[in-house]
Length: 80
Image 1 (cartoon, rainbow, N blue to C red):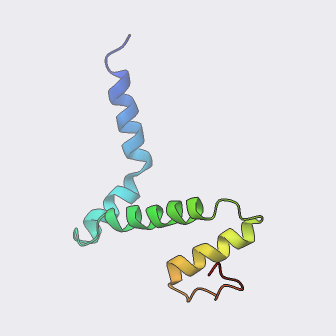
Image 2 (cartoon, helix red, strand yellow; image 1 turned 180 degrees about the vertical axis):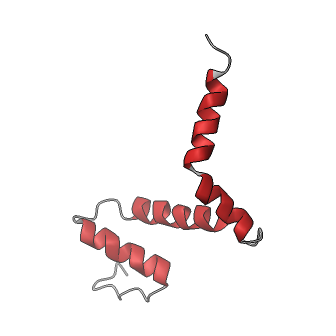
């Protein structure tokens, strides 16, 4: 096996993502990936909580409520 193949793979990957990587330096290092990771986590948790919803539209509405901090609708029934 050629020992340069892994390095070629890394070089190709860096070349493909060049603009995205350079955006970090263009922003003067003021932004981090933590913002995106937090957003992705909120989406995953919301989708996990919406298990059992019958349509994708209701899942989308739940996501809008979480990300937009919209008020939750009042329940139409209660247990107590």
